[in-house]
Amino acid sequence: MRDFVERVTFATAGDIRGMLDDVLADDWMALPPWARNLSYRLACLQQPGDRELLREAAADLYSFGPDWDGHAQRLRDAADGIGQVVSRRSSEPDQAPR
Image 1: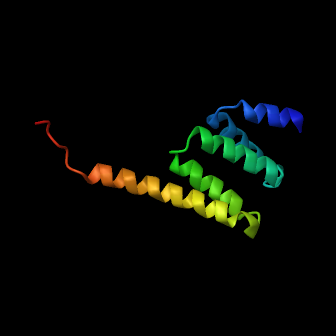
Image 2: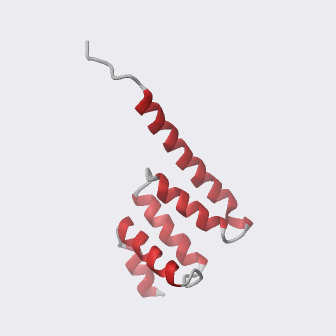
């Protein structure tokens, strides 16, 4: 356990996501919920503007019962908010400097 915590603590968000993808593809229950939560939390802290990551983390939280639903909903809301900002920016006409 200590080795896992040390590795995930200093890993990049990309490394964490790669590890989660590999481990969970082999055995969905290979990591206990605390390890998954810690991994996603650290990745989300490194990349708070990554909609896909926030949604992935939220979906994982929903998998472990109602205790985590509030946190999962906040992550989904944050991801939705990022999507709205991106949509608004891309639909705004470019303003020429005056």
